[in-house]
Amino acid sequence: ERTDYITFCQSIMDRFEMSKKQNIEFVRQFPKGSFYVLIDRDKLTQVIDNIISNAIKYSPEGGIITFAIRRRGNKIRSMISDQGVGIPKENLPKIFNRFYRVDRARSRKLGGTGLGLAIAKEMVEAQGGEIWAESDWNRGTTIHFILPLDRRDS
Ligand code: ATP
Ligand code: MG
Image 1 (cartoon, rainbow, N blue to C red):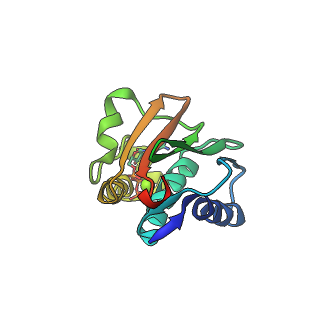
Image 2: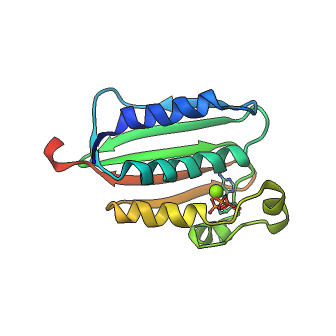
């Protein structure tokens, strides 16, 4: 479905603001204007929900979660950053594998199956995009993903 990406992300973030329980601050760094993408909205909602849920799950009290969007040529890039526990460098490539979880003990306490990011990767790639993670142990994590803009727009 042809979708205005900024409006789409605003409504996802509005929903997270409404249901926020922890002491967490959400910051949006969205460009002005409209950027159209051809996406399956339900699937992309699931992708972003998982990334933000992870960010919340691994954030400290009072942590800031930043959702930044930038246009680069005929692509749109999204970056979701947290100030949480982070992921050690050697584990970073594996977090997109099915059932992979960095710290089994910690993960068990926090719940989940380890499928969220594997599904996110599948869905982003099915829509012609790319996804990857960047992280500093104990400082935080950023998940990046890129989607192609609808050609009718560029
Ligand atoms: P599910 O998403 O199925 O509920 P999950 O959140 O454990 O379970 P994924 O979303 O696939 O699974 O994430 C895989 C693992 O990557 C997590 O268990 C966690 O160890 C690590 N991880 C993901 N996001 C973050 C983050 N923002 N900060 C720290 N670790 C993370
Ligand atoms: Mg998850």
